[in-house]
Image 1 (cartoon, helix red, strand yellow):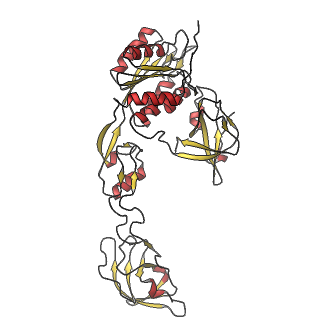
Image 2 (cartoon, one colour):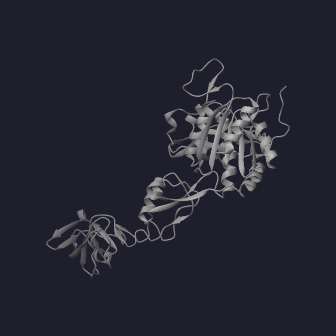
Length: 429
């Protein structure tokens, strides 16, 4: 006999309830790491500029620092004549003040002498002994990077909860930071349920499938900064599922099981997880207004988050992205989703059922100077090609029924590459 869901839960309501319950116990450990080891980690606090950058006005080219007023009337017929009184290099600045009618030889990156407000390129002057001739005027500020033009003391470099990227490392180094406080996200324990599932490399007999879902979710969460312990395969037998859960509870604060989460007679995962959660006095939700991923089961008990994910890889990823991560991030007081937000022009109508949080894989590409959104196949919980072809996700909220062709839609960028729309690989039907 096949059972059906008696009620489908709104994602927002469950996230609010479970993140609140989980916030009382779930913690991200703060660790201090050398700056070189901070790449890809999550900042545990806000980092700001400690000083102006540059700290003083600097030259951005090789040439001569002058007072712009001294060359204001310069021309080919009547060039300005300036006496060179010294030089300034990045490691050896000129300490005097620039007097009227004088110039100082400067190198790229050197501090501008007091009194100077302009740098004339070396190729724009004629040297005459210890003097130079300038044949045209240069506006104030030409060739100069002003103090604080790059960063002002107090400017935010990276916000708390943001992933530290390579460019953050460069700026942090320029500000003198040699260590960074990062968040070590909670430990995830993951096991896979299914009589038909075998590990890659094993013999694939008729009716069997390789374990793509478990490895995909493990890799995805690792890439997001979570520490993941993969506990292997378990059969659909209810006692085996219980054994998997018992083992997972010893290894993680977030327990994820893929497979066996629907409502069939052999789908025991959600049943076992619910049994555990309710025995611990917690709350468990099964069945969501989510596409793909409706059969998700998730609950909180004993200070841990437990969830039964779909055995289909794309549905399992959507469940993790839209629900599991959202609960965890909100419980930890971190912004969700952490991915860059872009607005892109919709290439064709995207329909979405009312009342459902729709997680749509899309491809964002460049057409001229405009970002274009190409929807990939909406249906198909196991269509892995949409994860390869797509570089972004469109979250259609329950109150919306989609986006019209030509409208702008907000997308979250998952991959760093944005290809040309002419490069192909685009919108499947």
